[in-house]
Image 1: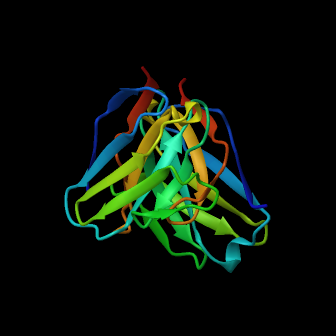
Image 2: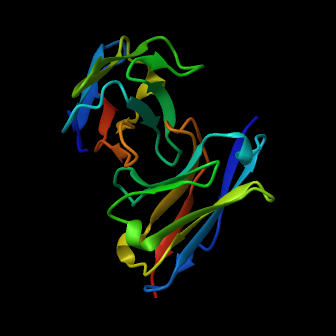
Length: 106
Length: 115
C-alpha cells in the first residue's frame, strides 16, 4: 500500500492553520498514524487510528479521514511545531510510511 | 518509564551482515506488543524494516524480506536485527520502536556501509 503525502514542503507562520494530506493507494479503513520528527531526533507519535490523539500531544493537533484520504491539521502553528510530519498505514502487516511533509517557518 | 536503546557496529563492510540489538527497559517484551525496526537514510524518509510480535511471529518489508531476520531474546529483554549482504544503500539511521503504531522509539544509531 503506497501513501502519498501533500504537500511535501510547506512554509507557514506562527499562528497559521496547517493541513497535511495523506492518500492511500487502497482503502485502509482508519489504520493510519501520524508522526512528527525534528532534526536529529526519533519520530514522535502524534495520532493513531486516524483521529485519536496520543497521550501528551497538544490538542491543536487533530486527524481525520478514513478509507483512502486522511488529513493532519494543526489549528494554530507554534514555534515547536516546525518539523517533518509522516503518515503511516497499519492496515496490513506490511507497514508503509508516506514520504513526509516538511513544515518550515515563513 | 519504557526506554529502548539500539546498539551495534557503526560501520559495516559491503556484502557483510549488519547486526543491531535493541535493549528494552521498563517493560517486559514477553508481556505484549509488536517490536519493530525502522531506518532512515541520510536526508530521506522513514522505511519500515520489520516487526516481531511478543510471541515470536515476524513480519518483514517485502523489499527487504530476503535479507532480514528479526529475533527476540526474552531472557535479556531485547530484540535484534540482522540484515545480510549490505550495500551502500543500507547506510541509514536505524531505529527500534515499540508497538503498531510505534509509540516509543529508541534514539537511533547510525550505520554506515563502506569498505
